[in-house]
Image (cartoon, rainbow, N blue to C red; front, top):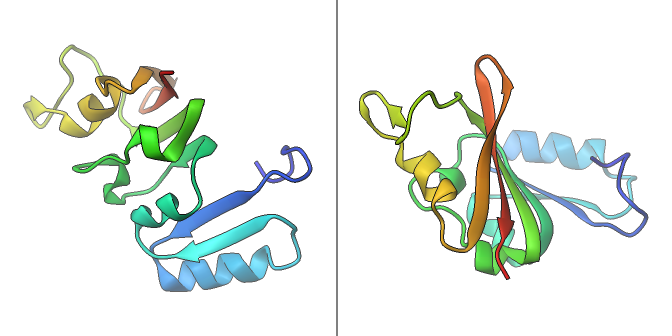
Length: 131
């Protein structure tokens, strides 16, 4: 993402693991407009709204308390939430129970979202903030 961005586009990463945040900050120390923040997922609110937000990893930003798209995305901004197994039915289930993490994004009233299967065992949700 860093290599493909236009000049002046800020890339922000929030890392919840302190050692990973420190190492990432060292790796990108000489790269303009790249910042690494240490903390939990709620730190995304410090830098938004975003044109594109990628929610990766196991933080609660994509689970029980999803980020508020109206706060973190500009109008028509995009969000990508990855690391799902592809759904095989509707409503989606996980362990025989409703997949509340997936449903929170797919049915969020501020988003127009869909799931995209990337591999046999991998899917992502892509959403666009409604105007």
